Image: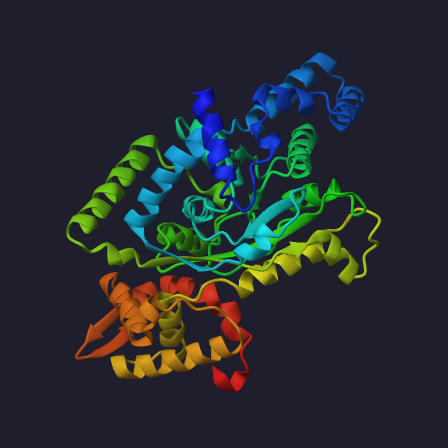
Length: 440
């Protein structure tokens, strides 16, 4: 197995824009030891011994447990053979997947010592699979994954794929120090990481406010005068249908936080999984997979942290201590490259006009909106390069799901589904709002 894994590493490194760094291939036990005996971690342990009146041995046991919980066990054979195959089958089984734009030349020109961080919006739990699949020809991504995935066998699979687990709302100073140490080690070791600045799934379809935790850890260990730069790659992702859309909008409507939402029983979860699986199998057999529509990803222009600090008036010789401006800038860049898909265009128009519209009227309004968005430099994915077909795709998806009602050739909003229509329109709402008032 080790021999085969080495052959896979040699093979993929010849074609990847970003090579697999040696840190990612380091044995897991070695990384756990490095974290456990990191000077900063040991310093935190000594401070807590005095503050909490616990023994050093008890705290070091916790450190080791936290490190083993976080540190992945990357397996190149599993990632590039099994995981890639599974990801390809899953995404093509659910969506018509498209890569809108990627600057592969810019990636290839990055210095080998550069630490690359992919920053992306968080629309669905499918983001992990779609991005892994589309980025597999460029690099092996390492994700920060929430505690929801710490179940067998998903937990083991994610670790072998290079993902690491994060307790999103933990205020434990020792745990946060261990997590910070791993993230900084991975960044210093050149591991390509994928981070969701929003921190959680969007409940209303809009881009959320940036969370500063992981970005702060990454930049805190960065030396602007050192030989290794950090480069952020903005990634925009969008779907004609988000599989969790009703759960997300229901949570928002009820005014509940994700933590306060009652967890479903294992029986209910299992039932919903098989219900979903059989439904998609049926759609595939009957050639109705178009019900889920398109999934599209855009990769933006690289942003050098060293150059960003210089351009924004920060001291180029000291680490960045406040990442709020950086996070806001990155989130804006992500928002500007979120793919504009047929469903988002159609829902935007019907919610703007709120009247019964014929297909011809809808197409005219969508074309006008599309022209304005394109004029302002935003990226739309138009299936087959045919705008009329794009509107047809959007209408078909929305009428099949009964979000729009059709009668006598006129389309109207289903009053029971306004929240869901707004959810999809919100995916590009920030782009529409940036247009001159007289064009919308």
